[in-house]
Each structure stands twice: as structure tokens, then as C-alpha cells.
Image (cartoon, rainbow over all chains, first blue to last red; front, top):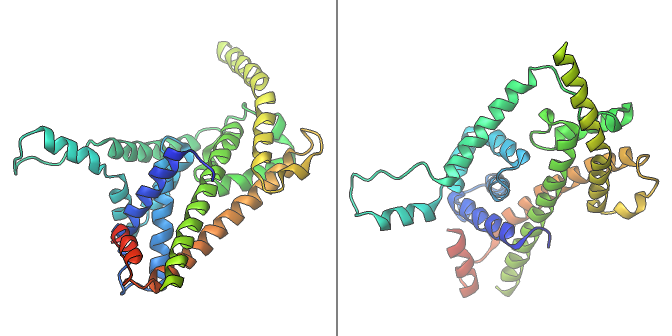
Length: 194
Length: 94
């Protein structure tokens, strides 16, 4: 399986959290609604597990643009462990507001800031210094532009960062596929036993 | 005058760093691709090919995720919730 153990654990845990939040075991959900919830929660969980990366920040920002995803983004980025620790250390009071400055919320806020900064940077003159020599040839340039559209946040990356981010993105996608295969296998076994 | 000098200095130093690093990254990417071993054609000549295969691979991974989401959607609606094992899954997902 690709990816480190911790990454997979965080990814899977957050994905299950997202699935729970999406209410996917409800009988009332349509096939397509359930599929959408599964996919979106997997994407958000993947981005959370790889926070700090430009592509993961861009992915969360893009998903957050759609109203129906916002609740799940908040659910996955909400640090429940932090809340528990906070409430146990201080005396319980109904006036205690939950601390919204959790680590996860900071990550979320930072990722939205980065993407607005990145949008501003796009309006400046494109700096072609880094790696432009190697990837400047026409055909390669065309393919680089194609790659930029496939990797979240790729449009505003320089060529070098693009390759680096692509590498990490592919590894994460492979892990996402592995996890989905695993869950499908488990559920498949359950179904045959019944 | 001074800004022009700093700009040219930056370009020189950055291209000195990135030549090797870029080809390193390209070969790293190549190793990720499913048929990465078959694109051996000299380092620089194949970077375009690696990029192309990378794009194709990402697209196929996206498709696979989409297909698996559909498969999971079916499985989760079919899963009989009566057995003990199903109850465990149920408690994970509900």
C-alpha cells in the first residue's frame, strides 16, 4: 500500500468521519447522492491528511466553493480531540464557547488565505525563471499546461513546484484508490456472507 | 539598474539549481507511472513523454476513484445490516 501508516490512518479516520456526517447509510439517499458523498468525503479526507501541500489546500478551497460541501469540510476539519481536551482541563460551564482556534481550523483558514493570495499572484507578470530552460520547448510546454489543469492549484505553480506537487498528488491518489478498494472488498465480503 | 542586476543573478542561480533537480523530479515521476520502466530513452528526451504519461495516469486515477465511488455507493445500499459484522461497519458509518 502506498503512503506512510500515519497518513493512511488519518486519511481513513477522516474519511469515515465524513461518511458518517454525509449520512450515507440512510436508506433515503439516492445512488448518485451517496456516490457524491463518498467521493467528496474521500477528497476532503485526503486533503486533510496531506495538509500543508499546495495541491491539498487548493483542493479544499475548490470543494468549499460548493455550498453543499461546506458542512462536510467543517466536519472533517473540526478537531474533536482538541475539544475534548479543552473541556476536561477547565471547569464545565455553559458559558464556555467551543474554541474555534483549533489546529484544524487554522489549517483550513490558512488554506483559504493561501488560495486568495495565489489568485492575486496570478495577476502579476508570470516569472519564468525556475526550470523554464528545460520545460520551455513547445510540446513539453503544452503537456505542462495540461498537467497544471489536472493538479489542484496547478495553474499558479512554477514548473518546478508543479512537478513536486504532482508527485505528492499522485501518491495521495494512489492511496485514495487503495483505501476505496479495501472498503469495497470488506463490504463485498460482508454481502456474500449474508 | 540594480534591479536588473539582481534579476539576472536570480535567473542564473535558479537555473543552476533546477537543471538537475528537474530531471530528478522527472525520473521520480517516471517511477510512479505504471509502465514507468518502459519509457527509458535518455534523460531529457523523455521528459515530454513522462509528462504525457503522468497526465494520462492522473486522469485514469480520477476515473478509478469515480468508479470506486459508484461501486461503494451500490455496496453501501446493498449491505444487509443484520449480521454482527455488518453491525460493526454500521457503527463505523452511522
